[in-house]
Image: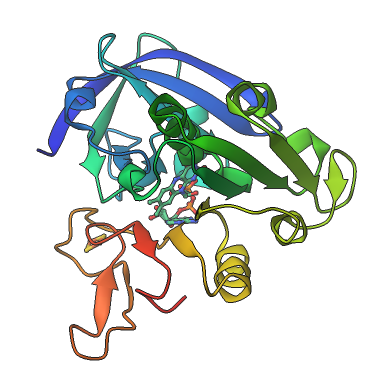
Amino acid sequence: MIKKELSKIISQKEIAADVYELIMEADLVSEINAPGQFVHIRVSNGFDPLLRRPISICSFDKKAKQFTMIYRKDGRGTSLMSDMEPGMYLDVLGPLGNGFPVDEVNAGETALLVGGGIGVPPLYELSNQLIEKGVNVIHILGFQTKSAVFYEKEFTENGMTFITTDDGSYGRKGFVTDVIKELSFDCLYTCGPTPMLRAIEKGNPDKKLFLSLEERMGCGIGACYACVCHSSDASGSSYKKVCSDGPVFRAGEVII
Ligand SMILES: Cc1cc2nc3c(=O)[nH]c(=O)nc-3n(C[C@H](O)[C@H](O)[C@H](O)COP(=O)(O)OP(=O)(O)OC[C@H]3O[C@@H](n4cnc5c(N)ncnc54)[C@H](O)[C@@H]3O)c2cc1C
Ligand code: FES
């Protein structure tokens, strides 16, 4: 069930250049059913900004009723969020969307998790859940530059982790797709900028592949049609809503 509540900020810290880790306490944690779901946040009590901001759930702890988000300070909404302090409250709607299907890989198989920039956070909970199942997990995390890198230690504790930077200032120089070519795996899960998702989908036509998409959102619950993308299913509906049908889709399900 989707809940709307005032959630308490437990902690907030900058973990990379303009990238913040925010830990919240919220009853809605009990309703999270898959990694890759997101929450929709109202960052101000007034009318500016009016629309909520969608942010992925990076990890959660049902016992402690806490969840973690990682976001990049970008426009007005996320800048306001970055000024908030522990003890303050945020109006949060969630959990929303359909997340990554963990049951598509079995114990002993290998899952490749590929994240780009601010698409990395939802892969962390996915990695934790796959590890718990006994799946071998390999991560490839791509960033623009060294100062943007975060959670390397956390991912490395779960499994082999490759870091790439566009400018070569840290890890391997180049794109995540260069590393994918060198590895063998049973299932690939990815989240990141659309050009990266497109390249991964095109380069791995025969693989079991799940992609998490980003679209500008209004309601976040499937009512306003702000977030539609084209479906590739000619016999069915011609579009899908990223907020309620996604954000995670099987490769080929939507046209990206
Ligand atoms: C399902 C989903 C999960 C996301 N998870 C994360 C995350 O974990 N960490 C993170 O840093 N960012 C994430 N984003 C992107 C994040 O929502 C935007 O960066 C944020 O809304 C920008 O808000 P702003 O007020 O700072 O910027 P502004 O540019 O002022 O925002 C203006 C409007 O555009 C929308 N918007 C702007 N950029 C995006 C975008 N890339 N995607 C969707 N809507 C956008 C905003 O919601 C708002 O309605 C996610 C987006 C989606 C759709
Ligand atoms: S944001 Fe309103 S339908 Fe998706």
